[in-house]
Image 1 (tube, rainbow, N blue to C red):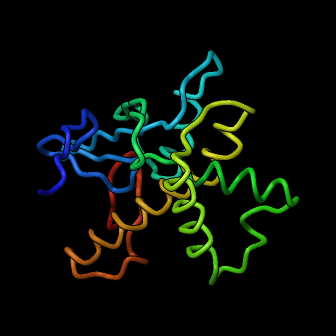
Image 2 (cartoon, rainbow, N blue to C red; image 1 turned 180 degrees about the horizontal axis):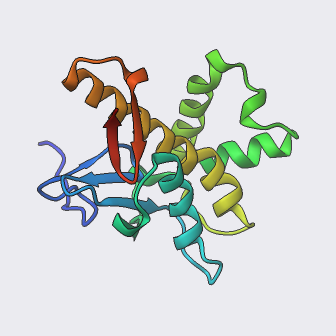
Length: 169
């Protein structure tokens, strides 16, 4: 009775924590970006992680890249969002701000249901990068700023980031 869970090579190791399904941060400030595509000679194992690292303000020297295993945890809602919105000649910016989280979660749920984890159609940068990695990196940066501000008992507005560190001037 009960489901047997297989060990996942992608599990966070001691001293690491997943901030999102694609970003893992270790206590030594190493950031691991999990790419839900296969690199077919297009350089997506550089471009896609750079998009996340840029938004996170991570020191590129501390960034590692891993390929996502075939697992529903890494289903690519950003890919679904990018293809569907672009097919309607829309961008995420055109969705009212109060609905963006709901829309993103809907695409993530659909991607999980469909086991959507594919490579092709020039989708890595223009969909996963734009709709997924940039958003995940920016959200992780925001969470880290808020956590540091709470720990230091200051306003998040007094904090900034630089090369994998939260700074309070």
